[in-house]
Image (cartoon, rainbow, N blue to C red; front, side, top):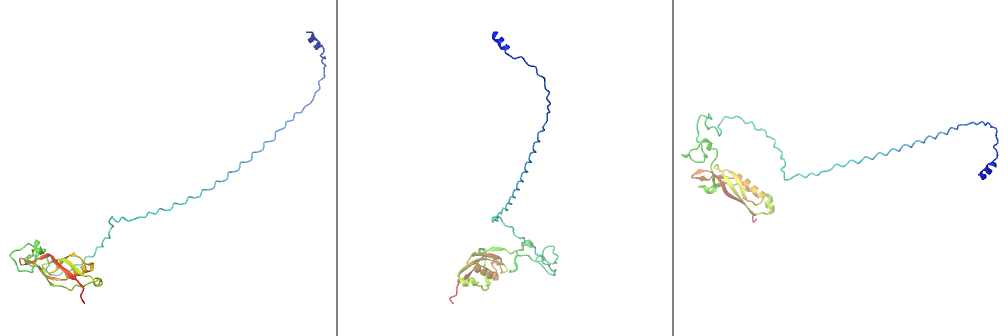
Length: 226
């Protein structure tokens, strides 16, 4: 306590001072406005994409199907000939109800004498066809036209034989030809053409002329020694 008392005694007494008034002015300073932000640059327009090239048309090669039948052109209808009306008899003039006024004998041929056997009008349309081996008398050629040799056969010096089977009618005309042994296309055609112009004595069976099929005949082509 003694030390504290000694310290306090050393403190100088407070001197009273007169107050002095000081005028103060407060100036307000407005802050500078912030600079306006620079406008953002407009984005550059994106380049337009180049148009894609149009795809080339695909070329499809078409191969015709040869196995399928191709359509055939339809034949144009031919105008029918105008038939003239001429007075006379025809194949049906002697049929029942034809109105011809008389009757006629029906048969298969007129190349023989009348027989006791008769046939109906519906059976008299065609002559009887008999195989060559079944005739009583075989047909015999009575007119043989000249065989015209094609120039291609002459140039090729081709020799040989063309074998045929003929159908000879009861009237002596050749109505059918079958080539059974060929030599050359032109030689075959020449032989067939000659036989179509030939005339025959008809074959008979029991004395009656008949149509005979399978009559053998041949055309021979050979070089002359000259």
